[in-house]
Length: 114
Image 1 (cartoon, rainbow, N blue to C red):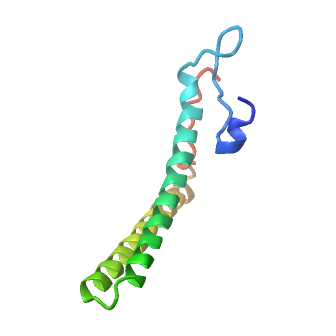
Image 2: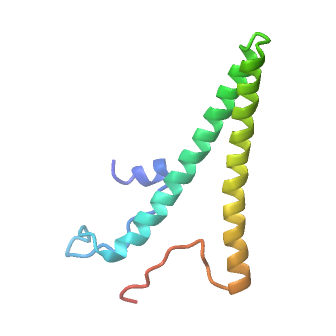
Image 3: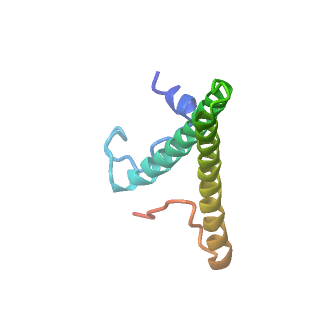
């Protein structure tokens, strides 16, 4: 069961584990934890974006011509798209920083014990 979980959740295998059975977390385990957290948060943001856009669509469809409901649907859709733009721009800014500085700012590494 434990071997199937990383494939289901697209999680990285834990690295930096110590001890005789490699089952004791150490400070080097933070790399895997951080990568998995970022992957999970990104997936969650995508799901929330999809749900908000669907909610805006249903609000629009069931507005019945009510101007307030139409405006609410329009604002919800606008804010969802603005959120998507903010997420994409944040990623592109990180890529630009990496391009200009040569540092890989989109990857978390501790380089402990190496």
